[in-house]
Image (tube, rainbow, N blue to C red; front, side, top):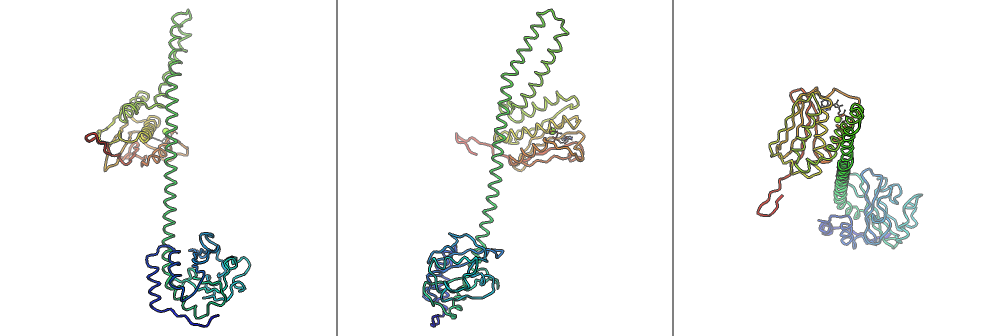
Length: 417
Ligand SMILES: Nc1ncnc2c1ncn2[C@@H]1O[C@H](COP(=O)(O)OP(=O)(O)OP(=O)(O)O)[C@@H](O)[C@H]1O
Ligand SMILES: [Mg+2]
C-alpha cells in the first residue's frame, strides 16, 4: 500500500457537487465524478453498484475500463455472486486490496469475479453508498497497478460516496418510477390494443353477418318467393284438392316471414340508409307487431343527441345493444309499453330503454349471453351500460352513456371537427 495521505478539501467537494449537478443518468454522474476525483483517488476503473429494492440483486454502472460487470452487459446479478457481497450486505464497511487477483475475498465459489482478470485489475478500494444508514450500493475504485490505495483513502472515498449516495438514490427512485409508469402505459396500451382488435373483429363479424343477410335476401328469399309463386300457379292448374297443397303453401309463407325477420336482423340497412332513430323505430314497430302483449312504444328523440354523428362501428354496436334490450322486453317482461329516449346531457350521449314489465328476476343460475354481449359491445366502444329496475321501482331500465362526438360543422367550404 502507498503511504502518501490524500485528503479531500472543501474546494474539491464543491467541484464534485458542481460536476454532478443536473446530470440525470448514472453514467453521466460517474464519469463527471471520475474526472473530478482522478488526482485524489487515481483509478483506471470506477464503478457504482446499486442494490434492488428487495436487496437481492445488484446492477453496476462503470466508467474507464469496460468490464462485464457493467449494466450494458449484465443487467442484474444476484447479490450473493458479487465479489463485494460482504460490503453490500453491511458485514464490512470497506474493502481495500493491493491485488484483487490474489485476494481470496473476491474469489469464493460462484463469485462473478472474472472481470477482475479480464480487465487486469489489481488495486481495489470499495466503500458503501448509504442512505439513512442503509446500504444502497457501493462505490469502487480500481487500478491495474498493485498497491495504489491505503487505508487513509477509505475516508476520502467514503466522503465522495456520501456526496453521491443520495444523488444515486434519487436517480434510482426516479428510474423505478419511470419504469412503473412505462409498465402502466404498456398495460394500458395492451388493453387498448385488445379493445381495438376486438372492435375490428366485431366489425368483421358484423360485415360477415350483413353479407349473409344480403345473400339470403338476394338468393334464398328470391328462390323461396319463386317457389311459392310456382306452387300457387300449380295449385290453380292441377286438379288436386286445395286442402292438399294449402299446408305446403302455408309452410312456405311461414318460412318466408321467418326469413324476412332473419334478414332484417342481419342486415341493418335502415340504420345505414336512414340513421339510428329510424332503425330503432323500425325495430320497435316489428316487435309490437310480433308481440301481442306489448301494446305500444314511444321513441323520444329531440334531434340533438348527436347520435347520428357517431362513427359507423359505434352506431352498429349501439343498435345491437338496443335490439337485444327490445328483444328481452318482448321475451321476458310481459310489458305493455316500452320507451326509448335519446338525449345528450353534459356532453354525454344517453340512451335509455325502459319498460313497465315484470322487472329483472332476483337471481338466475342460467348463463345468458344477451346481457353479456351487450356489456362486451358497450366496453368495446367505451360506453357505460347499466341494467336495473326503473327509478320508480317497477319494470326494467337499460342505460347506455358515452362521450358525444362533436358535430361536424361546415363553414365556408371548410370542414371543422
Ligand atoms: N326487460 C326485461 N324484463 C324482465 N326480465 C328481463 C329483461 N331483460 C332481461 N331479463 C331477464 O334477464 C335474463 C338475462 O337476459 P339475457 O338477455 O342475458 O338472456 P336471455 O334473453 O334469457 O337469453 P339470450 O342469451 O338469448 O339473450 C333473462 O333471462 C330474463 O330473465
Ligand atoms: Mg336476451
